[in-house]
Image (cartoon, rainbow, N blue to C red; front, side, top):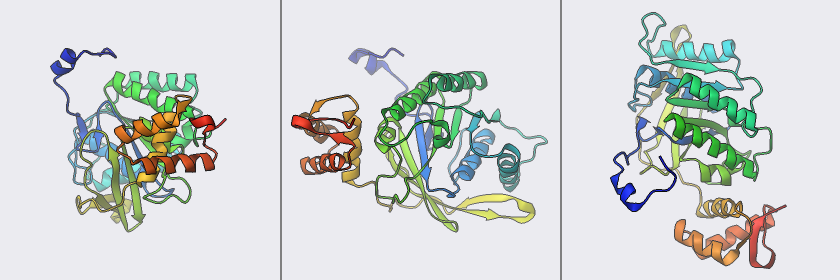
Length: 319
């Protein structure tokens, strides 16, 4: 599709609703982040999603369209972790290798692959073209980056590259990420969050204890956020793993605070270079719905933290 469309062209477009692989969670041609603290079962939950997607089964009581899957994992051991986990989850679902009716499903361990480098993104694009996945999972994001994630415009370029893959391959890209150390559910959750939040289409978090976890949608650009999805992981007989859920519950967890959202928006805007502070305030009041007081408080905090500079009433990223 061309980058520039007229109003007449826009009005002729028929497929204006997202094509969901997992209802209200994972959609084609989008980039989604699932973030959580370390050891929060995000890789296990996502492995279960991959199996459910390939076999067309439900995941957290949500229907999944049967689709091909490619997991690119740069952290876990293939046999001792990935194969062990996949076998146990498949057994918990009653799936056996003999007679399995599944879409193509692959795990790839790339070794040293950095997506902030041109050859790394090119390698991932080639891999996607080779396997033609409808769901591409990157696990975990930090192992695919050779630079600091904090306040780096490079992170935005990486996510733009992932969006290009999603659009070219008509696939969904799912990125697993870590919380900042000490981050809470209503704070600035992600490393380099301004660029990540500005580039992704949806953000989900996993919170809670081992006995009572919840998948929570922080935001989605595709429509109304789904209800919270509580789940538990049960070790069954003969070492099988089962992820069970009580079903969606009303959204009750706090979203990221208005101040943190304003800080992310200000930071993302500053990646474009010098801009008048007054113009940024007016823009964000209109596009983000933030109050002038909140935006100016966000600017003050970003300046105090050394992330942006505000010389002569103009904002820019700190040198």
